[in-house]
Amino acid sequence: MFKFNNNDAFKPIIGHSPVLESVIRTAQIAAAADVHILIEGETGTGKELMAQALQQSSKRADQPFVIINCAALPAELVESLMFGHEKGAFTGADERKDGYVQKASGGTLFLDEIGELPLSLQAKLLRFVENGECQRVGSHEHERVDVRILAATNHNLLQQISEGNFRQDLFYRLSVVTLRLPNLRERRRDIPELAAHFLQQAAEKNGSEVCTFSQDALNQLKQYAWPGNIRELKNVCQHVSALLPGEVIHKENLPLDIRECKPSTDIGYTLPEHGINMESLEIDLIKQALSYSGGNKSKAAKLLGLSRDAFLYRLKKHNL
Image (cartoon, rainbow, N blue to C red; front, side, top):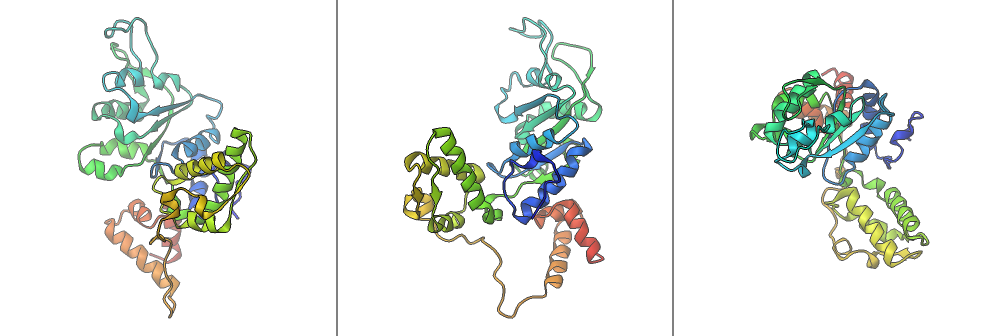
């Protein structure tokens, strides 16, 4: 079983599936390195929770942690909100104000949904990431601010780069380390542990007795595709806890879309009757991934669902 090495910051990230443990191991190392980190993952996989763990286990843990939802920034105020403004810089600017960057000085700036940031601001953010300098709206002076950036996205930024919607230079500046959070379909073995945690949370919030899932209900939960990932599972647990406090939750008590779902087609690999040569299969998959990625090891690792460190280990193991 994976150990947290006395690092309590990552304990709120619940689960023991190998794919999750691999990400956490990489995150623990990267947290101490004080480099910019890109967190990738589908909606609802816990990107903000990972960002909080990274900040709390870093040397900036006692400094500000400022969260920005880039998708919610109003277009007309985005630069002012990010970098601040001088008095009189625009109508309504009655006083000099700090932006999110200044408020995070000495600490961590979490840019959620970084893929939604307008191209016009991406250029200014790039300058800040490169040399730590920013410029308030209405000012001719540059100021230096020491901030670590954690960025998160549920988009394929490489695809956005190819479509001209995201700057390639900014991408590489932000992704010194990339953490890809697995979706719930990739860590189905964690569903019972997650469900028990969320049922306990819901009971404490409602002041009610804790309900539990029967085995037939858990089996059905494991079959579901979970398009909303962990966030959707949490909502389901809150739903049944509110309606059936203290009860044993059976399959027929689950929401209709989960109750009637057909077995998922991506539960896992079916072993042939004649068996396989595991080492040969792994070597072949690594070679295919390198071929598809044009030799780019980071991209190849992503194709295989591995961290870059885990991928490099396998390259060395097989002398590739």
